[in-house]
Length: 120
Image (cartoon, rainbow, N blue to C red; front, side):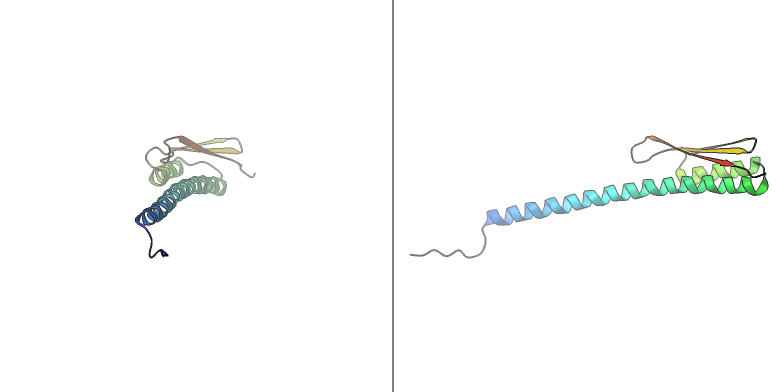
């Protein structure tokens, strides 16, 4: 007598569902990691843009104005969070800008510095 298999066994179904669920969970974890990396990159880009904006203001006016620095520091906190701070120093024809904040991904401090020169 010849036995013919019909359909699939319960064990095969369970194994197929296990493999499928592992793939779905791995894909979801990858999406979360990509989202947090994109958020970190966005914050880094915002810090660069903020520093460049103030440097261009200083270059345009030829001096570092207290009101401009205060507005700049408020924008840093608005975009990078309450931990965001900014420091601006002009020494002669040199400008040094520093932005610090706490990375929300791993609670590590981040810092960006931009050095520029003022044209005579």
